[in-house]
Length: 260
Image 1 (tube, rainbow, N blue to C red):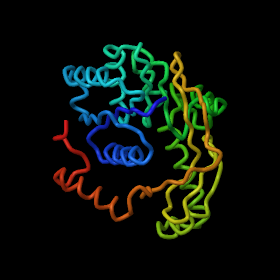
Image 2 (image 1 turned 120 degrees about the vertical axis):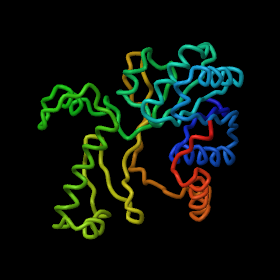
Image 3 (image 1 turned 45 degrees about the horizontal axis):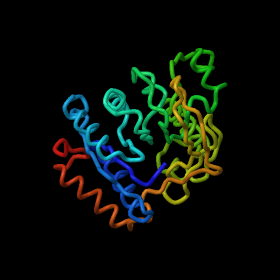
Image 4 (image 1 turned 90 degrees about the vertical axis):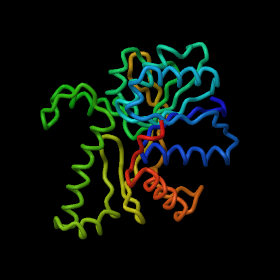
C-alpha cells in the first residue's frame, strides 16, 4: 500500500505495546510513521476529539491507518472516518480487533481497502457458522454473527476438555504439564501449544471487508503461527522493563487516562 502509516492506539497496555512493536518494526524496514494518536475510550465519544484526529489524518495523508482499537472503540473511529475523511484520498486501514459483529454496528460499511487480521472469519467455515447462526448446532444456540470472540471461547472449552482427558486430572499443574503435547482441529483450523511458553499456536488470516460487511479471506498462513511474547526487536529484559515502566507511569494500572 505504501510506507507511510498513521497509528491509532488507545490507552491500555495491549494497544500501547503493539504500537511500540510496530514502531520498532518500522525503524528496521524503512516505514515512516507519520503520526501516533493515543485516544482514551472516553475521548472516542467526544466529537471535537475525533474531528481533530480525522483532520490531522487528512492533512498528513498516510498510505495506511493502522488501527489498534478494540471492540466498540472501532465504531466511533470508523463512523468518524466515514463522516469526515475524504474517500478520494484512498487511505487503507488495517485492524487487529475488528470482526463481523462490530462491522454490523458501524452504520455505514467500512471503506474499500479495509483489511483485518484475525484467527477466524465467519466466511472461513460457513458450514459451522451457519449451523451456529441457525441454532442447529448441538447447543441450539442462535447468534447473529460467529466472529473471533465466539470461536476463541468455543475453542477454549475443547482445549480444556483435551487437557483434562490427557492429564486424567483437574489439577492445574498436571494440566500445564500436558499442554505442550496437545494439538487438535477446531472450526478455525488446527491449534497447538508452544513447547516453551505454553502459548497457543494457530493459523492467521488476512481479510478484506466487502461492501456487504462480510470479510473475504485473502490469505491464510501455511503453518501455525507461534506466539512470541518477546519479539526479537528488543531483548526479553528490555520488553519486560518497557512494560513495567508503563505500569508504574500509569500509577500501577494497566491503562492510562492521562495520555489523550
